[in-house]
Image (cartoon, rainbow, N blue to C red):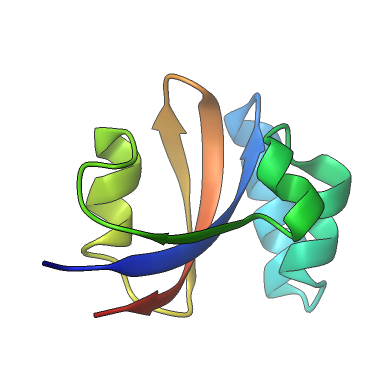
Length: 92
């Protein structure tokens, strides 16, 4: 079975998500931005979600984590919780 590790930033709007993505792509630290801006409790750990398998996250999140490019900041990804920036840190 596939396993992945990822970190994410959750914000209420697509606009916020795009602004933060531009900051990260401009060289700012993903973990620091997560600590300041993420509405998910994982933000305090730099957005780290640990390791998980398919079906453990909501479908929209899963689809990106198990098909997207590892190491790249992906998103905005809309879920029932808001808008996510996702970085897949590993997948096997």
